[in-house]
Image 1 (cartoon, helix red, strand yellow):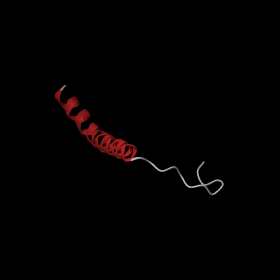
Image 2 (image 1 turned 30 degrees about the vertical axis):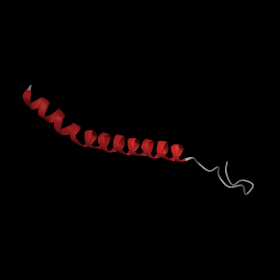
Image 3 (image 1 turned 180 degrees about the vertical axis):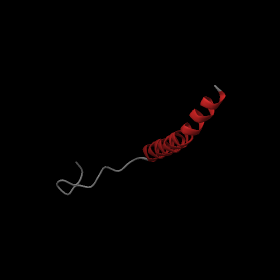
Length: 52
């Protein structure tokens, strides 16, 4: 755990920062897409029931 004894967290290289930013963007996109699918799923089920 960082800061337990007062030491600063390790510094990250530019490549590590870019990798973490890319991973964060990917996570945000996954959450948004998943949220949209969960929101639309009842409508899709209802439409399928009406078709059958």
